[in-house]
Length: 99
Image 1: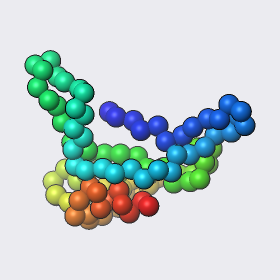
Image 2: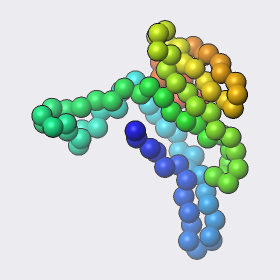
Image 3: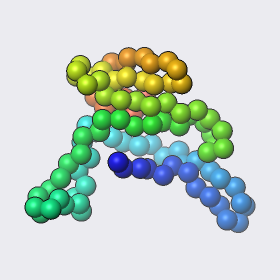
């Protein structure tokens, strides 16, 4: 699991904030500084992620996106008690839809 911390805390103002920089993602994470036990490069396939919708970490809503296990280019979106399917040509296209 890889976590991108998208929230900050300002000690001077004692306020929380949300980092709104655009995240660019592809189907694979290729961390050049991580190695497995055999010293070969590793790569991780992005299979799911959680998206926070809201302007601050103190309010908002979360949705989970999971790559469809049997259909390429399709994602399952979990939103409270609803599950929807969506089609995206690429992971980048999916992430671009959040900006």
